[in-house]
Length: 247
Picture 1 (cartoon, rainbow, N blue to C red):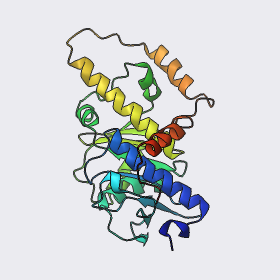
Picture 2 (picture 1 turned 30 degrees about the vertical axis):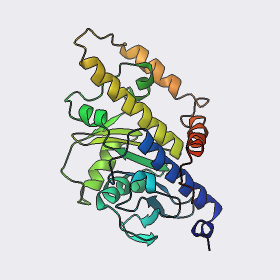
Picture 3 (picture 1 turned 135 degrees about the horizontal axis):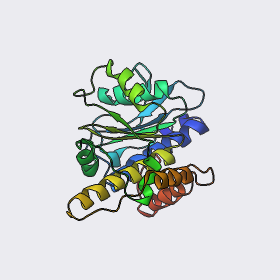
């Protein structure tokens, strides 16, 4: 029996899209050999979520080798082990933010750099306006191996969908996998631009708070659903590259 055939249609779609997100994260520099995670809810009728099997590179993740775990970190289905830090970080959000279908965490170079800056992310370009007054911060508590940190992670994220884990990296969440991925794409790019600009030692043009708030509101217009149009295009790129993720 084909492993992928045993899942119902909703779970299968989520598995394929999540595996695609891992492959895309590898292409865009959001992977870290075997570390970090992207998770999504298994389906609308299950109180579990899907996560990568520990030890696999992002480009080795497929729809069928994703693990299903519950909100206590127990493996419900699949073969392999999980990196417990993934459960602590992602489980905290899946448990407390029912509106978020997908959660993505990365250790990208620029994200790590900005996470170490006292003032954090500076909103300097058009595409970073979506984070104006809409990004959270979580102080580093060491390796995320203690479930006691779950409460502070969820509390610090609040109602935002993006968070900088200080001295650690970036985190985004979305109502869809495409939204979470595109938030990470734009957040990472905002970090890259900030680091690039800081290295020029030139005077930087900084938009006013009023303008940034106006632009942030534009991004929240329902007709510009982040990920809705980008996600199919990104999956077509994977198909063109013959990426093996949907098995």
